[in-house]
Length: 183
Image (cartoon, rainbow, N blue to C red; front, side, top):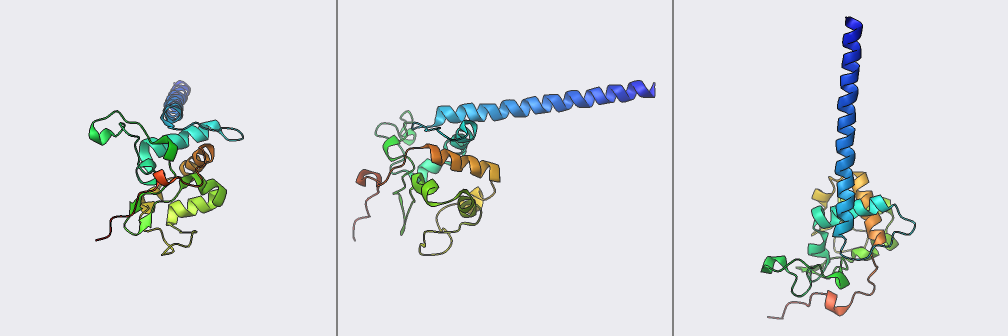
């Protein structure tokens, strides 16, 4: 009787573990699939991990809101959801920075992989380190205290996604917010 109970318990544990694993794989797969759908620009997957790129796209485009600050203007003409229009991301300026926040201008994220290692990117995201030698050694506008809570896997996925998107350099004038009028 005890042996049958042990076998039954072992089988139940295996079933629960299998179902948990299947749910986790399905959820991860849907993030990857959705990330591919959400990418507003063509992705160059040559030499990259396609699943990691797509997961990074999901994080950047569905969770991080990176486009809102790192694309000027975030939406194409006629594609501003805040104006009741169907969303259309400003692909020609996608993640090239140029938005003004007081004395700061958002950075061009399309250049990050060519200027920062993955480890430096993680340091930026975890601690707000400003390697560009800005006004302060810590990023002042970037919400790094929030993004710093992401796992290294998630930050690696974002970095891999940034490696896959088109580089915009130099940033066109149309992708830079003009300075406010002088008083």
